[in-house]
Image 1 (cartoon, rainbow over the protein chains, first blue to last red):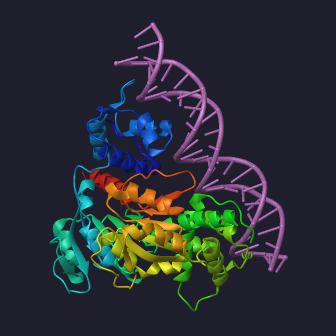
Image 2 (cartoon, helix red, strand yellow):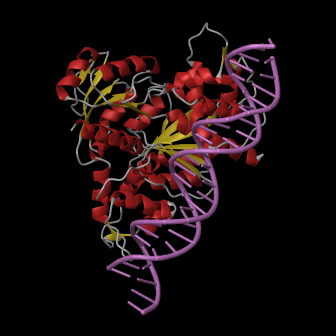
Image 3 (spheres, helix red, strand yellow):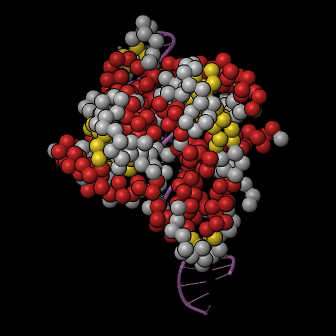
Length: 212
Length: 212
DNA sequence: TAGATTGTTAATCGATTAACAATC
DNA sequence: TAGATTGTTAATCGATTAACAATC
Protein backbone atom coordinates (compact mmCIF):
# COMPACT_ATOMS: atom_id res chain seq x y z
CA UNK A 1 0.00 0.00 0.00
CA UNK A 2 1.48 3.25 -1.14
CA UNK A 3 1.10 6.11 1.34
CA UNK A 4 -0.93 9.03 0.08
CA UNK A 5 -1.00 12.45 1.71
CA UNK A 6 -3.70 12.20 4.33
CA UNK A 7 -5.83 14.99 5.76
CA UNK A 8 -6.30 15.47 9.46
CA UNK A 9 -10.04 15.00 9.07
CA UNK A 10 -9.56 11.50 7.67
CA UNK A 11 -6.91 10.70 10.25
CA UNK A 12 -9.31 11.47 13.06
CA UNK A 13 -11.95 9.13 11.71
CA UNK A 14 -9.67 6.13 11.33
CA UNK A 15 -9.53 5.20 15.04
CA UNK A 16 -13.31 4.99 15.01
CA UNK A 17 -13.33 2.46 12.21
CA UNK A 18 -10.59 0.48 13.87
CA UNK A 19 -12.39 0.32 17.20
CA UNK A 20 -15.58 -0.89 15.56
CA UNK A 21 -13.81 -3.54 13.51
CA UNK A 22 -11.97 -4.86 16.54
CA UNK A 23 -15.10 -5.10 18.64
CA UNK A 24 -17.21 -6.64 15.92
CA UNK A 25 -19.34 -9.64 16.77
CA UNK A 26 -17.11 -12.62 16.07
CA UNK A 27 -18.25 -15.61 14.09
CA UNK A 28 -20.01 -13.66 11.37
CA UNK A 29 -18.72 -13.31 7.83
CA UNK A 30 -15.06 -12.39 7.59
CA UNK A 31 -15.75 -9.60 5.10
CA UNK A 32 -17.19 -6.15 5.68
CA UNK A 33 -18.14 -3.50 3.15
CA UNK A 34 -17.69 0.25 3.48
CA UNK A 35 -21.46 0.49 3.25
CA UNK A 36 -21.99 -1.81 6.23
CA UNK A 37 -19.37 0.05 8.26
CA UNK A 38 -20.96 3.39 7.41
CA UNK A 39 -24.40 2.22 8.50
CA UNK A 40 -23.07 0.81 11.75
CA UNK A 41 -21.38 4.08 12.65
CA UNK A 42 -24.07 6.37 11.29
CA UNK A 43 -21.82 7.92 8.68
CA UNK A 44 -21.98 8.58 4.94
CA UNK A 45 -21.00 5.53 2.93
CA UNK A 46 -19.02 7.47 0.34
CA UNK A 47 -16.96 9.08 3.04
CA UNK A 48 -16.15 5.76 4.67
CA UNK A 49 -15.25 4.21 1.34
CA UNK A 50 -12.92 7.05 0.50
CA UNK A 51 -11.30 6.94 3.91
CA UNK A 52 -10.68 3.20 3.66
CA UNK A 53 -9.25 3.59 0.18
CA UNK A 54 -6.62 5.90 1.69
CA UNK A 55 -5.20 3.23 3.95
CA UNK A 56 -5.89 -0.10 2.29
CA UNK A 57 -6.14 -1.54 -1.19
CA UNK A 58 -7.72 -4.75 0.00
CA UNK A 59 -11.20 -3.70 -1.08
CA UNK A 60 -12.86 -5.99 -3.60
CA UNK A 61 -16.02 -5.11 -5.54
CA UNK A 62 -19.12 -7.01 -4.51
CA UNK A 63 -17.30 -8.41 -1.46
CA UNK A 64 -15.79 -5.58 0.52
CA UNK A 65 -12.78 -5.74 2.78
CA UNK A 66 -11.42 -8.72 4.67
CA UNK A 67 -11.92 -7.62 8.25
CA UNK A 68 -8.60 -8.82 9.61
CA UNK A 69 -6.70 -7.35 6.74
CA UNK A 70 -8.43 -4.00 7.21
CA UNK A 71 -7.64 -3.94 10.92
CA UNK A 72 -4.02 -4.62 10.09
CA UNK A 73 -3.90 -1.92 7.44
CA UNK A 74 -5.43 0.79 9.61
CA UNK A 75 -3.27 -0.14 12.61
CA UNK A 76 -0.18 -0.05 10.49
CA UNK A 77 -1.14 3.22 8.88
CA UNK A 78 -1.63 4.80 12.29
CA UNK A 79 1.68 3.44 13.46
CA UNK A 80 0.10 1.32 16.18
CA UNK A 81 2.33 -1.61 15.30
CA UNK A 82 5.57 -0.04 16.44
CA UNK A 83 5.38 1.23 20.00
CA UNK A 84 6.15 4.78 21.03
CA UNK A 85 7.73 5.48 24.39
CA UNK A 86 6.32 8.38 26.35
CA UNK A 87 6.67 10.00 29.73
CA UNK A 88 4.02 11.73 31.77
CA UNK A 89 4.55 14.87 33.84
CA UNK A 90 2.19 15.55 36.72
CA UNK A 91 1.14 12.55 38.80
CA UNK A 92 -2.04 14.09 40.14
CA UNK A 93 -5.47 12.54 39.74
CA UNK A 94 -5.69 12.90 36.01
CA UNK A 95 -2.10 11.78 35.57
CA UNK A 96 -2.72 8.70 37.66
CA UNK A 97 -5.87 7.90 35.78
CA UNK A 98 -3.91 7.93 32.55
CA UNK A 99 -1.09 5.88 34.07
CA UNK A 100 -3.60 3.32 35.25
CA UNK A 101 -5.43 3.12 31.97
CA UNK A 102 -4.25 -0.09 30.41
CA UNK A 103 -5.66 0.55 26.99
CA UNK A 104 -2.84 2.65 25.59
CA UNK A 105 -0.73 -0.34 24.62
CA UNK A 106 -3.36 -1.10 22.00
CA UNK A 107 -2.38 2.17 20.37
CA UNK A 108 1.31 1.45 20.55
CA UNK A 109 1.83 3.90 23.38
CA UNK A 110 4.04 2.90 26.24
CA UNK A 111 4.27 5.25 29.21
CA UNK A 112 7.68 4.56 30.70
CA UNK A 113 7.49 6.74 33.78
CA UNK A 114 5.80 9.67 35.46
CA UNK A 115 7.45 12.78 36.88
CA UNK A 116 6.27 14.97 39.70
CA UNK A 117 7.56 17.63 42.06
CA UNK A 118 6.38 15.61 45.03
CA UNK A 119 8.40 12.48 45.80
CA UNK A 120 5.61 11.06 47.95
CA UNK A 121 5.41 7.74 46.17
CA UNK A 122 8.00 5.87 44.18
CA UNK A 123 5.80 3.64 42.07
CA UNK A 124 2.24 3.58 40.77
CA UNK A 125 -0.06 0.68 41.49
CA UNK A 126 0.88 -0.65 38.09
CA UNK A 127 4.55 -0.59 38.93
CA UNK A 128 5.50 2.40 36.82
CA UNK A 129 8.17 4.57 38.44
CA UNK A 130 7.29 8.06 39.60
CA UNK A 131 10.44 10.12 39.45
CA UNK A 132 11.50 13.57 40.56
CA UNK A 133 11.37 16.43 38.12
CA UNK A 134 15.14 16.81 38.37
CA UNK A 135 15.61 13.51 36.59
CA UNK A 136 13.43 14.47 33.64
CA UNK A 137 16.13 15.53 31.20
CA UNK A 138 18.49 12.67 31.85
CA UNK A 139 15.70 10.10 31.65
CA UNK A 140 14.38 11.42 28.35
CA UNK A 141 17.80 11.52 26.75
CA UNK A 142 18.81 8.10 28.04
CA UNK A 143 15.60 6.50 26.78
CA UNK A 144 15.25 8.58 23.63
CA UNK A 145 11.70 9.52 24.58
CA UNK A 146 9.84 11.40 21.84
CA UNK A 147 6.45 11.98 23.42
CA UNK A 148 5.51 13.85 26.57
CA UNK A 149 2.15 13.94 28.30
CA UNK A 150 1.40 17.04 30.34
CA UNK A 151 -1.06 16.67 33.23
CA UNK A 152 0.15 19.46 35.50
CA UNK A 153 -1.91 22.48 36.58
CA UNK A 154 -2.29 25.15 33.90
CA UNK A 155 0.18 27.56 35.48
CA UNK A 156 3.07 25.12 35.25
CA UNK A 157 2.30 23.71 31.83
CA UNK A 158 4.44 26.09 29.78
CA UNK A 159 7.58 25.59 31.83
CA UNK A 160 7.13 21.83 31.77
CA UNK A 161 6.62 22.05 28.04
CA UNK A 162 9.87 24.01 27.61
CA UNK A 163 11.79 21.44 29.58
CA UNK A 164 10.34 18.57 27.59
CA UNK A 165 11.38 20.20 24.34
CA UNK A 166 14.85 20.88 25.70
CA UNK A 167 15.00 17.19 26.60
CA UNK A 168 14.42 16.25 22.98
CA UNK A 169 10.70 15.58 22.90
CA UNK A 170 8.95 16.07 19.55
CA UNK A 171 5.26 15.56 20.34
CA UNK A 172 3.28 16.79 23.31
CA UNK A 173 -0.10 15.59 24.52
CA UNK A 174 -1.39 18.49 26.56
CA UNK A 175 -4.16 18.04 29.12
CA UNK A 176 -3.62 21.44 30.74
CA UNK A 177 -6.17 24.03 29.63
CA UNK A 178 -3.66 26.50 28.19
CA UNK A 179 -2.17 27.35 24.85
CA UNK A 180 1.44 26.18 24.72
CA UNK A 181 4.06 28.15 22.85
CA UNK A 182 6.38 25.79 20.95
CA UNK A 183 8.88 25.87 18.08
CA UNK A 184 7.59 25.03 14.63
CA UNK A 185 8.60 21.40 14.34
CA UNK A 186 7.04 20.35 17.65
CA UNK A 187 3.47 19.06 17.66
CA UNK A 188 1.07 19.92 20.45
CA UNK A 189 -2.14 17.97 20.64
CA UNK A 190 -4.55 19.52 23.08
CA UNK A 191 -6.96 17.25 24.89
CA UNK A 192 -9.37 19.98 25.59
CA UNK A 193 -12.28 19.23 27.87
CA UNK A 194 -13.46 22.82 27.56
CA UNK A 195 -13.98 22.36 23.84
CA UNK A 196 -16.20 19.34 24.33
CA UNK A 197 -18.10 21.08 27.08
CA UNK A 198 -18.76 24.03 24.83
CA UNK A 199 -20.42 21.79 22.26
CA UNK A 200 -22.51 20.02 24.89
CA UNK A 201 -23.46 23.23 26.62
CA UNK A 202 -24.61 24.77 23.36
CA UNK A 203 -26.77 21.75 22.58
CA UNK A 204 -28.46 21.93 25.98
CA UNK A 205 -29.06 25.65 25.64
CA UNK A 206 -30.80 25.05 22.34
CA UNK A 207 -32.80 22.29 23.98
CA UNK A 208 -33.90 24.51 26.86
CA UNK A 209 -34.94 27.29 24.53
CA UNK A 210 -37.03 24.87 22.52
CA UNK A 211 -38.86 23.75 25.64
CA UNK A 212 -39.83 27.26 26.60
CA UNK B 1 -26.10 40.93 21.16
CA UNK B 2 -28.25 39.12 18.68
CA UNK B 3 -27.46 35.43 18.34
CA UNK B 4 -26.31 34.36 14.89
CA UNK B 5 -26.14 30.77 13.71
CA UNK B 6 -22.76 29.54 14.79
CA UNK B 7 -20.66 26.80 13.23
CA UNK B 8 -19.11 24.05 15.27
CA UNK B 9 -15.67 25.13 14.14
CA UNK B 10 -16.12 28.57 15.69
CA UNK B 11 -17.70 27.10 18.80
CA UNK B 12 -14.66 24.96 19.44
CA UNK B 13 -12.31 27.90 19.25
CA UNK B 14 -14.21 30.08 21.72
CA UNK B 15 -13.06 28.28 24.89
CA UNK B 16 -9.48 28.93 23.85
CA UNK B 17 -10.04 32.66 23.62
CA UNK B 18 -11.84 32.65 26.92
CA UNK B 19 -9.08 30.78 28.72
CA UNK B 20 -6.46 33.14 27.42
CA UNK B 21 -8.44 36.25 28.35
CA UNK B 22 -9.06 34.97 31.86
CA UNK B 23 -5.43 34.14 32.47
CA UNK B 24 -4.09 37.36 31.00
CA UNK B 25 -1.45 39.26 32.90
CA UNK B 26 -3.41 41.63 35.11
CA UNK B 27 -2.59 45.31 35.39
CA UNK B 28 -2.03 45.90 31.70
CA UNK B 29 -4.39 47.82 29.46
CA UNK B 30 -8.05 46.87 29.86
CA UNK B 31 -8.51 46.55 26.10
CA UNK B 32 -7.40 43.81 23.73
CA UNK B 33 -7.61 43.68 19.96
CA UNK B 34 -8.39 40.66 17.82
CA UNK B 35 -4.93 41.11 16.34
CA UNK B 36 -3.24 40.87 19.72
CA UNK B 37 -5.29 37.82 20.67
CA UNK B 38 -4.48 36.13 17.37
CA UNK B 39 -0.75 36.70 17.82
CA UNK B 40 -0.80 35.40 21.36
CA UNK B 41 -2.52 32.17 20.33
CA UNK B 42 -0.69 31.75 17.04
CA UNK B 43 -3.83 32.06 14.94
CA UNK B 44 -4.92 34.09 11.92
CA UNK B 45 -6.10 37.54 12.89
CA UNK B 46 -9.00 37.60 10.47
CA UNK B 47 -10.30 34.35 11.87
CA UNK B 48 -10.16 35.61 15.44
CA UNK B 49 -11.85 38.86 14.49
CA UNK B 50 -14.66 37.03 12.76
CA UNK B 51 -15.10 34.64 15.65
CA UNK B 52 -15.30 37.48 18.17
CA UNK B 53 -17.78 39.33 16.00
CA UNK B 54 -20.07 36.30 16.30
CA UNK B 55 -20.37 36.57 20.05
CA UNK B 56 -19.84 40.21 20.93
CA UNK B 57 -20.50 43.61 19.47
CA UNK B 58 -18.27 45.39 21.92
CA UNK B 59 -15.47 45.77 19.39
CA UNK B 60 -14.40 49.35 18.71
CA UNK B 61 -12.16 50.41 15.82
CA UNK B 62 -8.67 51.50 16.81
CA UNK B 63 -9.24 50.27 20.36
CA UNK B 64 -10.39 46.67 20.29
CA UNK B 65 -12.51 44.89 22.89
CA UNK B 66 -12.83 45.65 26.58
CA UNK B 67 -11.37 42.52 28.09
CA UNK B 68 -13.93 42.09 30.87
CA UNK B 69 -16.80 42.66 28.52
CA UNK B 70 -15.42 40.12 26.07
CA UNK B 71 -15.00 37.50 28.79
CA UNK B 72 -18.59 38.08 29.82
CA UNK B 73 -19.87 37.87 26.26
CA UNK B 74 -18.08 34.62 25.44
CA UNK B 75 -19.05 33.02 28.75
CA UNK B 76 -22.64 33.98 28.23
CA UNK B 77 -22.64 32.77 24.67
CA UNK B 78 -21.30 29.41 25.77
CA UNK B 79 -23.89 29.21 28.50
CA UNK B 80 -21.30 29.14 31.26
CA UNK B 81 -23.31 31.60 33.32
CA UNK B 82 -26.20 29.27 34.03
CA UNK B 83 -25.07 25.98 35.53
CA UNK B 84 -25.91 22.59 34.11
CA UNK B 85 -26.43 19.63 36.39
CA UNK B 86 -24.84 16.38 35.33
CA UNK B 87 -24.32 12.89 36.65
CA UNK B 88 -21.41 10.58 36.04
CA UNK B 89 -21.65 6.83 35.50
CA UNK B 90 -18.61 4.69 36.25
CA UNK B 91 -16.62 5.62 39.32
CA UNK B 92 -13.37 3.99 38.21
CA UNK B 93 -10.09 5.81 37.92
CA UNK B 94 -11.09 8.08 35.10
CA UNK B 95 -14.46 8.76 36.66
CA UNK B 96 -12.86 9.69 39.96
CA UNK B 97 -10.36 11.91 38.22
CA UNK B 98 -13.22 13.81 36.63
CA UNK B 99 -15.15 13.95 39.91
CA UNK B 100 -12.09 15.34 41.63
CA UNK B 101 -11.37 17.91 39.00
CA UNK B 102 -12.58 21.18 40.45
CA UNK B 103 -12.39 23.17 37.25
CA UNK B 104 -15.76 22.22 35.81
CA UNK B 105 -17.66 24.81 37.81
CA UNK B 106 -15.92 27.43 35.71
CA UNK B 107 -17.76 26.02 32.74
CA UNK B 108 -21.08 25.97 34.48
CA UNK B 109 -20.99 22.21 34.92
CA UNK B 110 -22.06 20.74 38.21
CA UNK B 111 -21.64 17.01 38.73
CA UNK B 112 -24.29 16.09 41.26
CA UNK B 113 -23.43 12.45 41.83
CA UNK B 114 -21.69 9.40 40.48
CA UNK B 115 -23.17 5.97 39.86
CA UNK B 116 -21.45 2.61 39.92
CA UNK B 117 -22.28 -1.07 40.14
CA UNK B 118 -19.99 -1.44 43.13
CA UNK B 119 -21.30 0.07 46.38
CA UNK B 120 -17.79 -0.01 47.92
CA UNK B 121 -17.74 3.66 48.84
CA UNK B 122 -20.57 6.02 49.56
CA UNK B 123 -18.87 9.35 48.95
CA UNK B 124 -15.92 10.72 47.01
CA UNK B 125 -13.16 12.66 48.72
CA UNK B 126 -14.93 15.79 47.60
CA UNK B 127 -18.13 14.72 49.26
CA UNK B 128 -20.07 13.84 46.15
CA UNK B 129 -22.35 10.84 46.62
CA UNK B 130 -21.59 7.60 44.80
CA UNK B 131 -24.86 5.79 44.31
CA UNK B 132 -25.94 2.41 43.07
CA UNK B 133 -26.95 1.97 39.47
CA UNK B 134 -30.45 1.04 40.58
CA UNK B 135 -31.04 4.59 41.73
CA UNK B 136 -30.03 6.14 38.42
CA UNK B 137 -33.46 6.66 36.90
CA UNK B 138 -35.13 8.02 39.99
CA UNK B 139 -32.25 10.39 40.71
CA UNK B 140 -32.20 11.79 37.19
CA UNK B 141 -35.92 12.37 37.11
CA UNK B 142 -36.03 13.89 40.58
CA UNK B 143 -33.22 16.31 39.79
CA UNK B 144 -34.11 16.93 36.16
CA UNK B 145 -30.61 16.06 35.06
CA UNK B 146 -29.95 16.76 31.39
CA UNK B 147 -26.35 15.69 31.00
CA UNK B 148 -24.70 12.31 31.57
CA UNK B 149 -21.00 11.53 31.63
CA UNK B 150 -20.04 7.97 30.71
CA UNK B 151 -16.80 6.61 32.12
CA UNK B 152 -17.58 2.91 32.19
CA UNK B 153 -15.68 0.23 30.24
CA UNK B 154 -16.48 0.11 26.54
CA UNK B 155 -18.62 -3.02 26.75
CA UNK B 156 -21.12 -1.43 29.14
CA UNK B 157 -21.26 1.98 27.53
CA UNK B 158 -24.22 1.34 25.23
CA UNK B 159 -26.49 -0.06 27.92
CA UNK B 160 -25.60 2.79 30.26
CA UNK B 161 -26.32 5.18 27.43
CA UNK B 162 -29.74 3.63 26.85
CA UNK B 163 -30.62 3.95 30.50
CA UNK B 164 -29.52 7.57 30.61
CA UNK B 165 -31.72 8.43 27.67
CA UNK B 166 -34.64 6.59 29.22
CA UNK B 167 -34.06 8.67 32.33
CA UNK B 168 -34.52 11.85 30.34
CA UNK B 169 -30.95 12.86 29.56
CA UNK B 170 -30.40 14.98 26.44
CA UNK B 171 -26.62 15.27 26.14
CA UNK B 172 -23.98 12.62 26.71
CA UNK B 173 -20.28 13.12 27.27
CA UNK B 174 -18.79 9.79 26.32
CA UNK B 175 -15.32 8.75 27.49
CA UNK B 176 -15.74 5.11 26.48
CA UNK B 177 -14.02 4.27 23.20
CA UNK B 178 -17.13 3.11 21.37
CA UNK B 179 -19.69 4.52 19.01
CA UNK B 180 -22.98 5.03 20.83
CA UNK B 181 -26.28 4.51 19.07
CA UNK B 182 -28.76 7.22 20.07
CA UNK B 183 -32.01 8.78 18.86
CA UNK B 184 -31.79 11.87 16.70
CA UNK B 185 -32.37 14.58 19.26
CA UNK B 186 -29.74 13.33 21.69
CA UNK B 187 -26.21 14.73 21.43
CA UNK B 188 -23.19 12.51 22.02
CA UNK B 189 -19.86 14.23 22.44
CA UNK B 190 -17.03 11.73 22.31
CA UNK B 191 -13.91 12.50 24.28
CA UNK B 192 -11.76 10.34 22.19
CA UNK B 193 -8.21 9.73 23.33
CA UNK B 194 -7.63 7.44 20.36
CA UNK B 195 -8.24 10.32 17.99
CA UNK B 196 -5.62 12.49 19.64
CA UNK B 197 -3.19 9.62 19.75
CA UNK B 198 -3.64 9.04 16.04
CA UNK B 199 -2.62 12.61 15.28
CA UNK B 200 0.39 12.40 17.60
CA UNK B 201 1.44 9.02 16.31
CA UNK B 202 1.31 10.21 12.73
CA UNK B 203 3.48 13.21 13.55
CA UNK B 204 6.10 11.03 15.19
CA UNK B 205 6.10 8.59 12.29
CA UNK B 206 6.79 11.46 9.92
CA UNK B 207 9.53 12.62 12.25
CA UNK B 208 11.19 9.21 12.37
CA UNK B 209 11.10 8.84 8.62
CA UNK B 210 12.73 12.23 8.23
CA UNK B 211 15.55 11.22 10.51
CA UNK B 212 16.35 8.12 8.50
C1' DT C 1 -6.41 64.38 10.26
C1' DA C 2 -3.97 59.86 10.00
C1' DG C 3 -3.80 55.35 11.31
C1' DA C 4 -5.22 51.32 13.61
C1' DT C 5 -8.80 48.34 14.07
C1' DT C 6 -13.33 46.97 13.18
C1' DG C 7 -17.00 44.40 10.40
C1' DT C 8 -18.41 43.01 5.74
C1' DT C 9 -18.26 41.41 1.11
C1' DA C 10 -15.77 38.56 -2.29
C1' DA C 11 -12.24 34.91 -3.45
C1' DT C 12 -9.91 30.87 -2.26
C1' DC C 13 -9.24 26.70 -0.34
C1' DG C 14 -10.30 22.10 1.40
C1' DA C 15 -13.41 18.60 2.49
C1' DT C 16 -17.67 16.27 1.65
C1' DT C 17 -21.01 14.52 -1.37
C1' DA C 18 -22.78 13.00 -5.73
C1' DA C 19 -22.33 10.66 -10.21
C1' DC C 20 -20.33 7.06 -12.77
C1' DA C 21 -17.31 3.76 -14.83
C1' DA C 22 -14.67 -0.50 -13.46
C1' DT C 23 -14.71 -5.03 -11.43
C1' DC C 24 -15.57 -9.43 -9.37
C1' DT D 1 -24.89 -12.53 -16.73
C1' DA D 2 -26.74 -9.27 -13.18
C1' DG D 3 -25.93 -6.80 -9.26
C1' DA D 4 -23.38 -5.17 -5.46
C1' DT D 5 -19.47 -2.87 -4.32
C1' DT D 6 -15.32 -0.73 -5.42
C1' DG D 7 -12.40 3.48 -6.73
C1' DT D 8 -12.34 7.78 -9.40
C1' DT D 9 -13.72 12.05 -11.41
C1' DA D 10 -16.76 16.09 -11.04
C1' DA D 11 -19.99 19.11 -8.28
C1' DT D 12 -21.30 21.02 -4.05
C1' DC D 13 -20.81 22.70 0.24
C1' DG D 14 -18.68 25.06 4.13
C1' DA D 15 -15.00 27.28 6.25
C1' DT D 16 -10.98 30.10 5.90
C1' DT D 17 -8.56 33.82 3.97
C1' DA D 18 -8.08 38.07 1.48
C1' DA D 19 -9.62 42.71 0.17
C1' DC D 20 -11.87 46.80 1.44
C1' DA D 21 -14.96 50.21 3.20
C1' DA D 22 -16.49 52.11 7.80
C1' DT D 23 -15.28 54.13 12.19
C1' DC D 24 -13.26 56.07 16.27
